[in-house]
Amino acid sequence: MIDELNVVNACLGSIGELPVVELTDDHPLIATARSRLADALVQESHIKWWFNTDWETLRVANDHFIYTPADAVSVYPYRRPDLIQRGRRLWDRINSTYEMQGPVLSIIVRNLPLEDLPPQVALLVKYAAVQLFQQDYDADDAKKADVARAYQKAFITCNAEHARQVQLNGLETLFTGRERGRLRPRQSSGIPVR
Image (cartoon, rainbow, N blue to C red; front, side):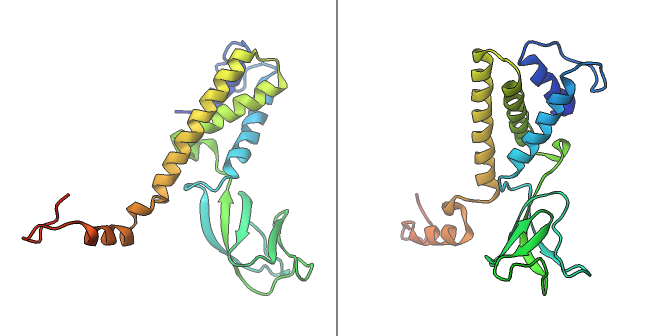
């Protein structure tokens, strides 16, 4: 399982440092590694993945503002191109105001903690954190290339899982499956054949 300690030790190992036993150990680079992990979580959560995207109706507060959830990386008001997220509130671009009249159905992309991520996404975040950490410190080119390849492989794996989860393949939908069934050649007995 990938946890914060695992990511910190991966960051330290990428520049030739020994691993730590606990996050409270006295090591000057632990804080930087944890900071890069937080950056990587936001960076990778900004993509609308299957596990961090929710539909939610945002309601108007007593001050006539619509506040976005605290864990939202981004908010996309559904069929409302006049509204955008600014800070933690929705902004009406047409009327140049934060004041809203009614609820807004929105797609919320959430920033989830590392322990709540699916394993393949946690691995992706780990490699992203190591890459960000290596930018701050001198890692050798071979280690940078290894981490870049590992990140690319993890991204491809996550993309494939995303396609499966949201059923992006048009041949797997209920409608096309039914239509494909009609187009199959049949024997005289009416039993479909391949």
